[in-house]
Length: 370
Ligand code: ATP
Ligand code: MG
Image (cartoon, rainbow, N blue to C red; front, top):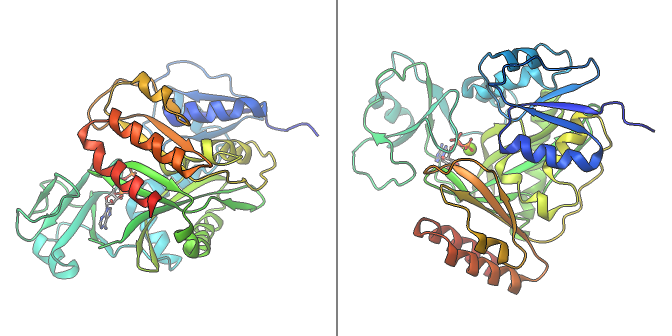
C-alpha cells in the first residue's frame, strides 16, 4: 500500500525541524522545515500536512500560509498549550496534579502570594518562556539560598501583572519526563520515563531508561494519555514532571518533539522525530524497541570540539547555530550495551567540558554507577 501523505511542512526551521527532516528522509517523506521569516510563496498542495516545531509564532508571510492550510495538525492545541493559563486550566479540568498556581492580577501582591503559597513562589511568563527564561523567583527575604534562577526578588516585577502565573515552589526529589505519540485513530506509544537534570533552568543531561523509575511508568503514561485523548492529539507530545516521593506532578506540556526525548535517536528503534513524522504523515506507528541505557548531554554555549567525535559510542548532533551563552547548540547521545564503556566515555567527555558541566556529569556518572 502506498503512503497517502508524502509531504509534511514544519513551521519553524530550528534544530527540531532539522532533526525531523533527518528522520523523515528514510521513510520516503518529503519533510520541509520553513523559516518563519521566509518571504516567499510556498507551493502547498491540498494533500500536504503541516506541523510545527514551536508552540508560538508571529504572523509572517510564511506562517500565515501554513496556518491557513486545512491540514494543520493539532492547530487548536498550540495556542492552548502555549499559554500557561489555558494549559493549567485544562490540566485542572482533567484532575491531573500540577504545582498549585494562580494567574497574577492587578490585585495581587507578593505578600499575598507568599501567604497563599509559602516563602518561595515562582512567577512564570504565561507565554514565550523557555530554558528557564521569563521566570522570576519571589522570595520573602532576599539573599535566600535558592539557586534555581539568578532572577529573584521580593516584589512582583513592574508590568508583570496579568502576564505571569504564580506557582508554589515544589520541593521535588527529581525531574522526569515522558514522551509519547498518538495517531489519528488514537493509538498511543510511550517511551520509558527519562530522568532530567537542569542546571540554571536549562536541561543539561537526560538519562533513560532507568529501572528505578519503572514503577512510575504506568501512572505517567495514563497522565499523558488523558491529555492527548482530550486534545485528540496527533504526533509526539512531551510531559515534564516533578517526582515527589511516589507522586508525579505535571510541570508543563510540550505539543511537539522535546529535548528530553533526544536520547531516542540513539536508544530506540524509532526516535521521537520518526514517530512524529509517522503520526503526522499517517504512517503505521509500531512500538519502539528500546536498545540500551542512554545518556543525552546538551551542548550549551560552547564551541564545537572535534574531540567529541573520538569518544567511543558518542553520537554528536551539532545544530550549526551561532554559539551564545546558555544557548543550546547541539547534543551528544550515548546508548551503549556495556556500562563500563559508557562510564569511560562519559568520563572522557567530562574532561572536554568546562567547569559549568562538572556537577551535571558527576551526577550522571553517579546515577549510572548506583
Ligand atoms: P523549558 O525549556 O522546558 O520549556 P521553561 O523555561 O519553559 O522550560 P519550566 O519547565 O516551567 O519552564 O521551568 C524550568 C525549570 O524550573 C524546571 O525544569 C524546574 O527545574 C524549575 N521549576 C519550574 N517550576 C517549578 C516549581 N513550581 N517549583 C520548583 N521548581 C520549578
Ligand atoms: Mg520545562
